[in-house]
Amino acid sequence: MPGGEFKKLGYRLVDDIAEFIETIGSRKVTPGETPEEVAAALGSRPLPEDGIPAGELLERAGELMFGHSLFNAHPSFMGYITGAPAPIGALGDLLASSVNPNAGAQILSPVATEIEKQTVAWLAELIGLPEGYGGLLVSGGNMANMTAFLAARMARAPESYRKKGICSGGHMTLYCSKATHTWLEKSAALFGHGTDAIRWIPTGQGSRIDMDAFESTVAEDKRKGHTPLFAVGNAGDVSTGAVDDLEAMATICVKHNIWFHVDGAYGMPAAALPEMADMFRGTELADSVALDPHKWLYNPLEAGCTLVKDPGHLRAAFSTHPDYYNFDAQEGSRPVNFFEYGLQNSRGFRALKVWLALQQAGRNGYREMIREDIRLAALLYQKADDHPELEAMTHNLSIATFRYVPEGMDTGSLNRLNESIVNALQRDGRVFVSNALVDGKYCLRACIVNFRTGEDDIDRVIGQAVEKGRVLSR
Ligand SMILES: *Cc1c(COP(=O)(O)O)cnc(C)c1O
Image 1: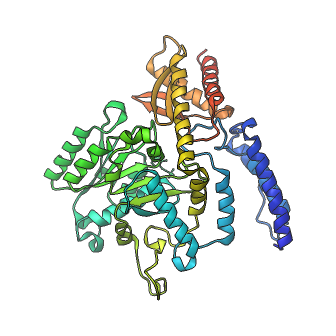
Image 2: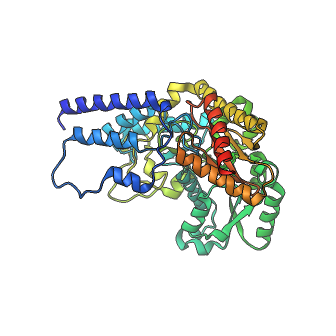
Image 3: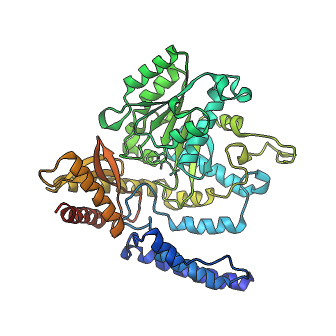
């Protein structure tokens, strides 16, 4: 592509993106099309034999993206947990992919490596971890958690494990509450433990892990000769945002030599708020922490982060030294080569967008945005509570759950009704909420990780839920 064309097409694309961002609130969150409708819009054709002009392609790509997407940047998008992307992140990604450093090895990404180190240090500082934690950026929460899990296993599994494999270590057991995200199940299955190795500890008050049940399960496993290896504390569980008693959990883990991991993929950024210090106390005792800048730090996908108290455990798990690499410095100190800290070898420059956004907003900017998301979730809970046809269920951090409750309906019918309300809302596309099961009750769930969401969006969710509820319960 000649330089003049790159400029012309680039400016045009930036104009279109700017217009998209400006007008996002006046669009629908999603067109709610079926996969068939979307496929029809795309059209099927074979791979082109000959090239097509770039301008034509970009224009078509813009039409498809702006016309047939779900916009998680939309102020009324409150489903699942995907942060609204900060525009500076989009610009950062453009810069990153244009220079295209390979952030696997320092020699291939001199300044990108330094920026990633600084970004990781800032993330640890933002959430209040003491000095010394280190880690790397990964693709998201699943990878951040799994990376920590693999480091933990290398660090705490019996000696024979590295050479002889998983069976040589006896039965290693894993602990988490029933509210824990599916990544642990996936890890147990994929990494050879089997899902039976997981002890799903019941939750007590407010969906938090039952500490007595946790400790007695550990004791029972030890009696049976198992090796308690790894425990997960939730810093904002994926469903209702509950934060476990991390300090109490850490104490039990220290006592039994269990690696204590905090899954903060969703909620960890709220630890930046001074008023939340009590809720997150104990994070600073964790052996590892996962967080997800593409959730509540408003970065575009993908960005997750693994932080480990002793980053040497990451190197111990992931470092290899093939003879075709010449990555250790001839002079100066030994460089950080991020391929030695995680699963990836070649790595994109994810850190740039995170580094830019952290500075553009600053600690105070983030505090304000996160605090506002929490306030709006509380407001939604309150409005549901005040409404005669709604029942407010939970509010933790920036997640509120509630359901539609017409008079004289049994639990089963209420569950089916609320499920159909969620489906109808998602198809309609003016607002977007997801679902949660709270004590067996099917609820509408709104998670606000969006600096554009305002009180009018909260009113819209309430209004739409009631409107759909009335129609569907008729
Ligand atoms: C979202 C989430 C994950 C998974 O993160 P991805 O970025 O979707 O891979 C793991 N744990 C918790 C608590 C989460 O909220």
